Length: 170
Image (cartoon, rainbow, N blue to C red; front, side, top):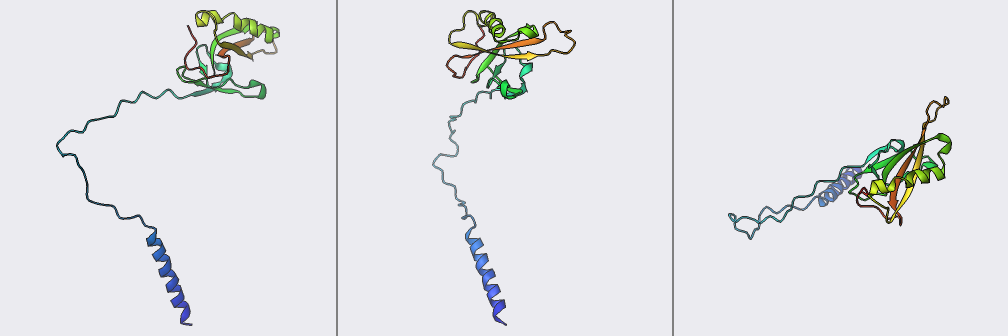
């Protein structure tokens, strides 16, 4: 019966020795420096540019002219929000026109026509390597009291799919 207490004490001492083996090595306390204490140290740090403003998430129906979006929202699969970013940072598209249209006219041909009509005015002439895409927001109610209840939100993006890195506004 006297063996069990000895075994328990041996196991406890073995556990303590494992724990002390895991401790961090002692830190050196001597400082070694080759520079003279009174000599000035040249600074090589440069001022960091201010960080770009953070992306803001908003409903795509609330987009405004001049805003740049990280990605064009896939509204056909139910995406309702979009990340608005600084136009000086990489982005997929820029809103350049909000065109009100009648509800029964808010189809592809009308969207194409409405958006094509505003490109030159926004870019300062032509669209170069840009392509047009758009979203259609409808605020139609059952009364029909809103004469132009739909809005075509026109966006310009790189024709090859590359991110834009600056505003396309001319």
